[in-house]
Image (tube, rainbow, N blue to C red; front, side, top):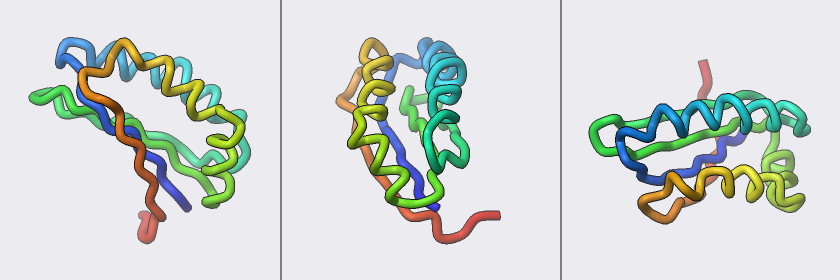
Length: 97
């Protein structure tokens, strides 16, 4: 399994709006993508750091929705929340419970 993370900072009073946008629009769209396995929205309410994360069955599944521009279309939805440029990272999930 593979995880894609997007790290960014927002105003602390906007975390709930950003997480609602992720829940209401990004997750339903991800569910239509091949290999989607789940999602999390992590946040630090003290600093405004946010980290939406999606899980994918294979690395190929994760990369396919970048090639199709699906990932980029989801990121654009958050432009008004970014206080810092977003950083995209990807990891292999080694242990899962």
